[in-house]
Length: 149
Image (cartoon, rainbow, N blue to C red):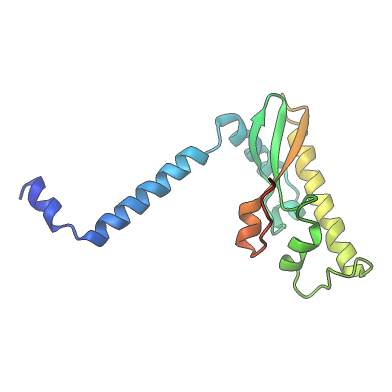
């Protein structure tokens, strides 16, 4: 059976699957971090405390710009912590900023984020960290944040 006959036997839905797989591979190749970024993320994974490793959000280095590591975060001025904490801890009233349980999980978020930053800052060649909002993670949690114009 020749290549031509084989191509004729492939159904149209097979082509759709093949194209989707190729697009996923292309997306992965484009987004794949460079070697120094992978090394920082490996250091972050190796040196993280159990508390950081078990935290439901995974802080990571997205890229390096000069001596600055750009890291992902689930919170900033556009996405206050209570939005994501409400998804991670649905049994806590995160709208009541005096709620002791809310204060506890908010402080935990701060501690693990600081720990991730400190691990990255301790690596050679990194002098600062800049946080970048992880819009994709927020979207997956059902939190829509409008894009800045």
